Image 1 (tube, rainbow, N blue to C red):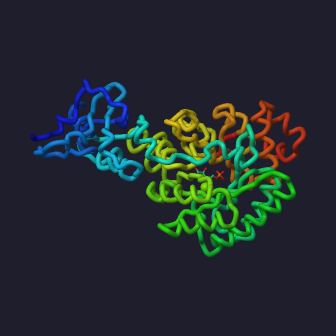
Image 2: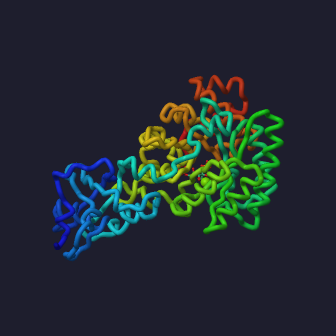
Image 3: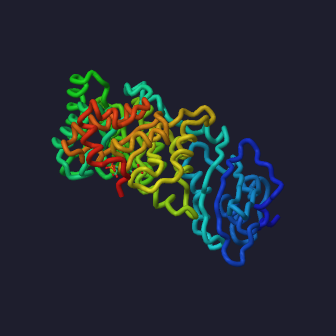
Length: 416
Ligand code: CAP
Ligand code: MG
């Protein structure tokens, strides 16, 4: 029996409970009508191609079906049978739903907008170990957002300088020190030295403040090297690792998740390079889908933007956070992290938009404080607490000169 593109379209099709259902935005190319475009998306992302193929038996059971076409919104809906996928392999799933179709001539634009993950496929992935529970099981942030800072400048500081900044930020009231996405194991700040010295300062700060503190250590590296860095983090008593999930790739993320299970380490996902996929609203892969993939692969935190308040372009932070907090076939939730141009003067509007079950990170918004890192940390913690309790920032500044100075310097403006 011959199969052609047309065999991948069925407007009457009802998805089964094990189908993965994907929503795409497309712009058919000239001379290609909507049904033709939709059938080509379903075909090329499952087991079809441009030429008629003679196939026998159950091969057809692996074919995806385009069944929804909404020309007004430009959206099509495609159902993928469970048998098409290798359980627990995110690279394989993505090679289907976000693979060659992204370059097909039959469409001028195509964007994977959203996925409805079926229970069977979802449960083949580990999901997070902690999610938002990091705030109480590892840290003592309770109901307020977990607070973090990245030493700035993002790279170039020596290990001593890095660890000292950590001490000042922790004693200023912040929960977490975080490495920047491009700080890994460079000669000016080698990985293991940074780990041991930062944790030594962490221990000092815990003793002085009586609060639990931790460190989002960037273990991003090629292949097994990254797993060795995860082991080193555990051996030295760190509770978290950070991974640049997009640049390192989902296969590596899955390996790190497995290794972190062994040590009980939580995973902070930085999404550097995500904008290469999701910035143009008519093409690529949405941040919503990237966040979904990250949850299934098992990260505990992921950056999702600042609801437009910060320095970076964001896509639907509120909607993505709702999905990360929501029910997903029993998987743990994920702590969304707001970061990028944040400073104390933005915290009331940020928490109004995103609630308090998040993490908040400020680098420039702490280290750019006129009185330095420690004062910046005091101001950021005070502003976060005030916003979480619905107290006006100006009122909070009356008993916190560090916050007053920050509001004087940055006001409530969004930096660009
Ligand atoms: C923020 C940051 C983060 C971005 C990532 C930076 O620094 O360290 O990497 O927030 O973007 O390098 O820009 P500042 P996103 O606090 O000094 O702005 O959170 O959108 O993924
Ligand atoms: Mg950064």
